[in-house]
Amino acid sequence: MALTKNERRLRIKSRVRKIVSGTEARPRLSVFRSNKEIYAQVIDDVSGKTISAASSRDKDISSAKGTKTEIAALVGKAVAEKALKAGVETISFDRGGYQYHGRVKSLAEGAREAGLKF
Image (tube, rainbow, N blue to C red; front, side, top):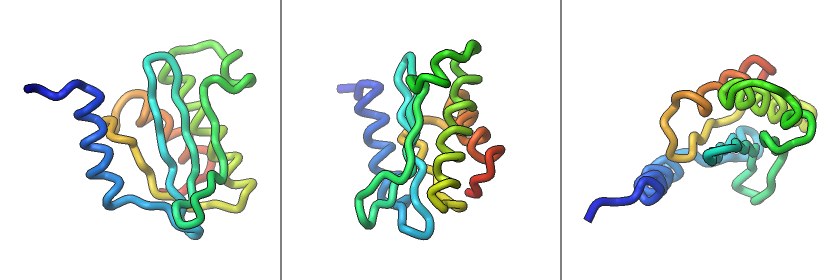
């Protein structure tokens, strides 16, 4: 039996998560992409706390016009600005089982432009 798209993504995600984890010094930038929205969190896995988060549903971002890829870049900038305010400069990127392409890549590049290093 073939795997569904989501089952396949979850398998890839578990392979990635075996390697990528967030520490206090270098937290993890986790991405979740749905058909309409995109969400990003900066997570310290050791203490189990979310340091900052942003999504395309935030009021300032949802009012912006543009393609889903352009909005993903805005989400990346927003999560990076919040992380920098919290004192985080370097992160490890967790693409969540998605290809590093399109909206996921746009989010990562937006976070890099805003000053995060990874």
